[in-house]
Amino acid sequence: MSSEKFYATISWDGYIDENDKFVWGSDGEVLIQRDRLEWLIEGVMDYFQRFSERHPYLDLASKESDEKAQDITDLVKSEINRRQNESK
Image 1 (cartoon, rainbow, N blue to C red):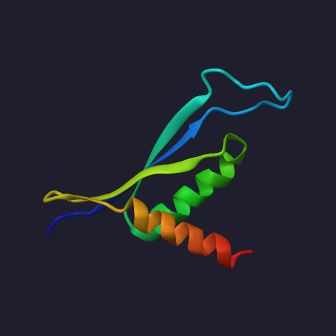
Image 2: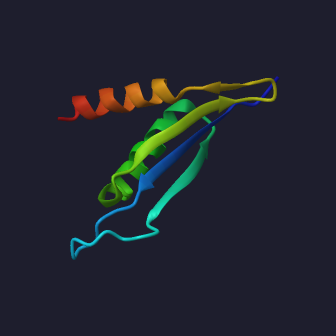
């Protein structure tokens, strides 16, 4: 039996500081790994909130096992959008 892992890359393209100046070299990314899809979605949403001033976005999400890797970016984006719309 293989063990599935879920990964997401949250990126940002730079941001404006409190003095309305663009911070050069402030672009970046963070890679997270979770054992369940639900935990991955919650983790991405947490990072969106944590880095909100940087305008983060989901760059890539995948489900990986010993046998294969599957792109689940659209699935995760759709679920995040659904949850954000429900909370409004």
